[in-house]
Length: 287
Picture 1 (cartoon, helix red, strand yellow):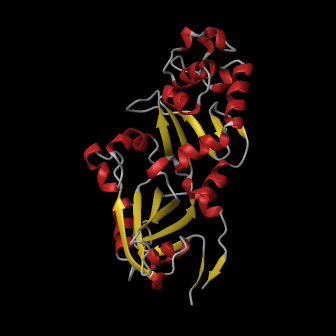
Picture 2 (spheres, rainbow, N blue to C red; picture 1 turned 60 degrees about the vertical axis):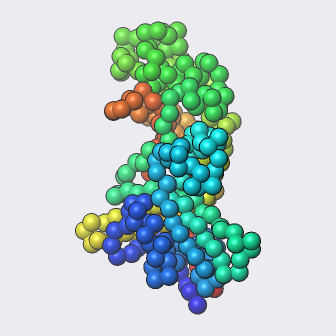
């Protein structure tokens, strides 16, 4: 009989990267963490015949896409909405047409509770194509990221261009109130779609699970939590859509901001603090 918390766990050693996670799954017969993960996913260890974990590169080569069971015609769509870092293939002892069960994992790692993790970044026009907001919102978001210079649209500002905190871009607090309200209304009305696209994705490489790992170098331990993606989306998406004190946008526990830095500083990005997922309390599970 197994008795453990379906919440966070701490294990000896470090395994906070894709290769290490794959190795643990591939050693599932003896690896305690891998067995816990499989049980959380709903599998009974004694009924499993075969497990193989594959690291999915950030950008899969088009020539390799057929290795994952997809047609090359699907390539662009798969890459556009990919959120899977590790794919786990599972075959049960009682085979149905020798079929494999597929579980897609999104991995998030952090070293402290303060760590942010970028979960999605694109050009504003790419998000416009995905979510169908109008030209006014698109222009406002481009002013926000600095893709469009503030001097080109002074009519959208509530202050003079010379009074901006940064002459290269606009904070949401510097846009006219009716434009900010329009942005907030859009993300309120489309919150489910937005949160799903940036955390789960779509299609064959959409994530089924999110695994957060936090390595503590001081005592060489890794704390982890594995949650189904719907639970994670509900957790991070819960809360108001509102302007942050610094002029970015909060969508629940998700922050939308200008990317900054290099490369592509004027892209729009979405960030979370993955360690916040540890706040979810586990519950006893026995079998």
